[in-house]
Length: 594
Image (cartoon, rainbow, N blue to C red):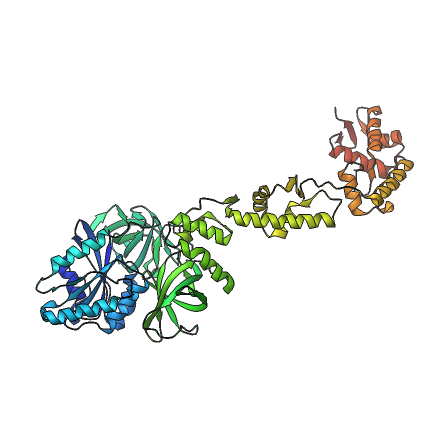
């Protein structure tokens, strides 16, 4: 169901035309009816061609430009209204600027009040409109003369509007998104929010979340065009009664979606261009509001360069905003009360460096018109690592068709390749510094790469020159080997241990290099039975064999007497045997396990 939005100068007949097309007066407030002036958004609907169409009528007076902008974010089709007897006026230009900056390409111009103008004036007004539209998103759109009072041209306008609607592509997002423009209480319905459902669907009973406040509730009732509905699809003006939603915590400009589907951001990368009547670059010192959806968000602007005919910039908002790639916005200079620029969200989380920002635009801008899956894939390619949930939120519901699963995150294949190349360099350096160790501990390598263990495990298969053994990573084919001096040192150690018998010297007395000691223990050349004692394997076997000569239950003293060891040697050895399952302790006695 398409949404048609009006635009045009004050008193050019927007509301009157909508009433003539729909049979419904879009002006809701008594003050509007008394003054004959649209102040806030108005709504109506009608069947145009073979479709039911929602109409959003916006105020034309410059004092209510913020209200016009609140409605324009949900437009599918623009109905620009220009009075034939007055021609192009200041708000005609500013409203066209909004439609052009939002790149609304489906629309037409209603040349109203033709009953007040002769043929020559109508022709001049038509030529002027054509000239004004030149170079904008509405260039070449139909221009239809009409009088809402006499009815002349109304059928032609309906036919032209039906043709524009029929030419619209079906490219709605499947991610639920309703920009709120009204909030009010209603008995039996809870808090009611209204807006244009620009994506996805809503059904009675759905859990919903209103952002940026993260306020939750459940849909109790739905209405569209004054009819109760169980379910509403995208493109529909909607009123939703939401139970559990405190109306004091919700405001115009906030967005209703499904819980967990949106991840707000307060710093986003954009491309933008100035309105054609702005003759100087935008200053970063200006006070701006970003109009997105139905909201007006105070932002600071930082320009970081140029790409083609667009300026690359970063917008920093005062609070997080639920944005996604491809969202279009309009910038309003608060001081001058003037629409000055408009653009598109390229990356919902802006890089910190200008160089990176320009690279991000080059990587992401080409896919902004693509489907959400392509956007998600490009976003993953740019970020390198991200969770599927955030990728879906920032791409509009997409899932990359390629990626490396690492715990709860996805890695792009390029990022995985970069990580594993860094890992190879780090491990090679570790081997140089620690030639006697079998490899670099997993935790140490993950820390050096600044990734988690899950990520490390996911990227290692990308390089067959790295291997993982138990809890260490080594270059393929690497084997720790003792050099000549270390072999000589080992020979000294072996000789000292053999000559000492079962009461070997303490390790600290032998002054063994710690790295050499670890290597000898890993290779099985030494067996460590306590912090202070290590034996040759043959010595250990001999002591274990002596256990067979002891009674079924024996004491430390009996083992000591059998082996000739002192208590300082017998106790550590038996405790080692307990840990290895060779013996089992029962109080002051032990037995040999079968």
